[in-house]
Length: 244
Ligand code: GLP
Image (tube, helix red, strand yellow):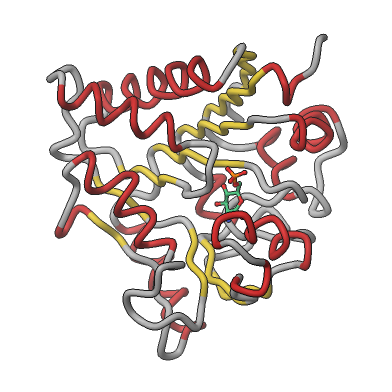
């Protein structure tokens, strides 16, 4: 089991800076790292901070590979709601990561078989070095909806009503949120050598304390971070943490 650290920061700017420090350190130590960049609102400032450091010449991501965390199913190519598109705009483009340095989740064909090959190939290339994750309000990581066991593989899932509701803020309307998705499994995710979980806002207060202090189990998939193989750092802002 790795170490679990908690960094409580005052605001969004500090969350972005602290998160970017952790990511930049990991990449400096391992320049060919395979990195999972979550979409969602919380890590956007962190990615902008990384892009700023790259422009300033203090961060070299030239040999980093990005591995997609999750994607909705049933979208046409180019749909505005594509999470791959979001990952492109927020992480790949600003950091100049492209071509063979991008590993995309399967979204069509025989998904069951494609997900098995995806996990096999990911393992063959050395697995995940660093996962930058956000926290679902129901305790999901990626789209590993509760209940999810620690070893579940990459697979297609139905989104819970709570997740569909929460994702409505990305696309303007809950009715615009697809109800099926593919997600990197908790198995490959929890095997990452390092995980940075960014958590912000009052709405995440109950779940962040539950994941850190409550029992470990499938009803809160993120609680398995307590027993992850690699080092986990939870970067949490004051409004999510409270005045403890
Ligand atoms: C979404 C995504 C996750 C994301 C999480 C938190 O449903 N599937 O990948 O990390 O919820 O999102 P946010 O940072 O917008 O709160």
